[in-house]
Image 1: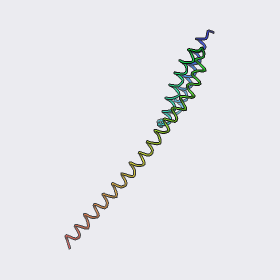
Image 2: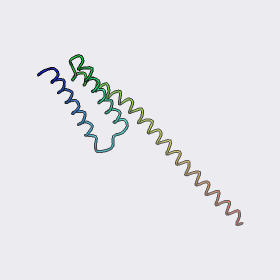
Image 3: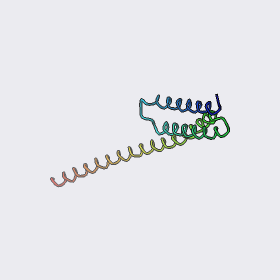
Image 4: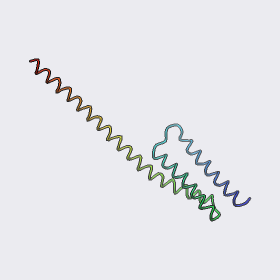
Length: 118
């Protein structure tokens, strides 16, 4: 088998493996962290395959690129996930404070009505 065919088979095998890994997570929506990892791995594998093809080893390039891209994607996705979690917590606190303000406003309104009737 020629180098090009072996390289193409290696790339196809890596893409299929990545597809299977991503489809295994289909039970629930992917988190931002998982999306980042997946996108990084796929982009890294593609870039690695292109670079690897230039030196005659597209399969190795795809594997190395996929691993490095996955790590980079995880780091970016993890940071984004942490920001989303912090934003959700802040929104929850704001909502609780708004509810408390509304409760106190109603209490003041009730006290004002009681004073007017006395």
